[in-house]
Image (cartoon, rainbow, N blue to C red; front, top):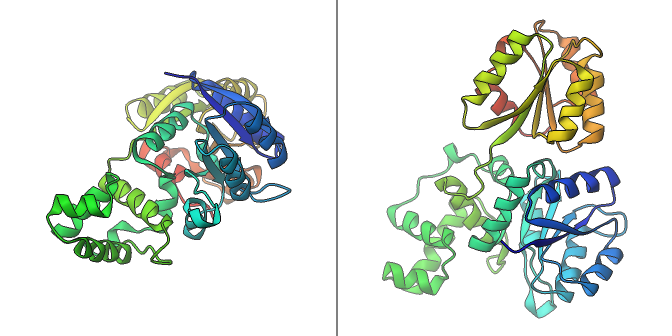
Length: 346
């Protein structure tokens, strides 16, 4: 595979360096530059070939979408992926909107910052963009949609939806379904309503969001993400049991385990996990202190703290330390852990 040159634009140094480590970890990507402003990024794009730009939505001088469009005006073949903590379908429309008459190129991706934590996942996103076109983070779609509440699709709508997910144009869909182009347009309008995708009928960004929504609902998205996990627990038997349970679940990959806070922090820095499962009480420090240190070093990872004692005080201290949750040890099973990892942010 040809080496992919990646430009990172983020005004937060720690976050910028963390993403650079993820990029390097793919083995087939290299960091062409890691800068804090659009002006610096523009100089790099003008001076050398760059294949992909990862751009934070919020920059000091201007928005990431404005920076991304400016870079694509200079280098149209460049793919731009915007990342942020914000979940918004309005933002999705803004990212993907393309207005050729106004020289406003569309961008290729919308990703939650916390999900730029796995090198394999980042590589799969790039592959999906090559295969299907623009990418929107599945967690954003899950937040927006409640698929169990969606009105069922008719057989014709289902057929049309699959062609949209495959990237076919309206004319191509009409030929495949042996119907008029007007009939296809009516089917697509019905899909917009059923998938709750609002906006200007002429906005091409709606088509991108619809296609991604259909792929998510159909379950054939390319990036099937496996969560990399480390376990920090001083009780050897408990540590071995949890690692064993997670190891048998295909949604998780156990990257390692540690019996103390300091060794756990070092392990986290080495493995860059998606998730850290950590006991509150460790022999050399408490889990709250260790959580702060891990998140300082690797801000994109997520931490779940646990204890044999179900304590509201522990819960409050866990959230204050930056963990996403605190749960009693008796609830530490793969399904509960998976649910907590994917729970919407407050």
